[in-house]
Amino acid sequence: VGEDNEKPENPAFLEGAKEISITLSSTGSYAHLLSFLSDLETLRRPYLISSVSLSKTLGEGVQAIILSVNGKSPYLKDL
Image 1 (cartoon, helix red, strand yellow):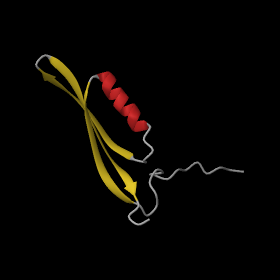
Image 2 (image 1 turned 135 degrees about the vertical axis):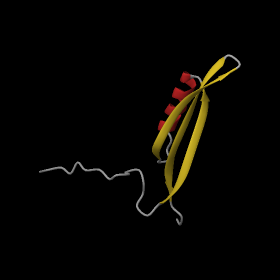
Image 3 (image 1 turned 30 degrees about the horizontal axis):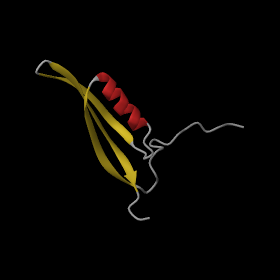
């Protein structure tokens, strides 16, 4: 008996659902950003990340990392 290992392109998204674009940004230390990403992974709401960017900033001798996450999340217009 063969198994079908093909998965839908966007398995987290519901058929017929609308999509809302999201952009999340966080600034802080490496440890802070790891915690932020860990929190994202445990969200109950499905989402699809399309891009992630990192940059650093210097301000008055303090270094910080800027994390930006872009993606989309499904929602049902009529329940």
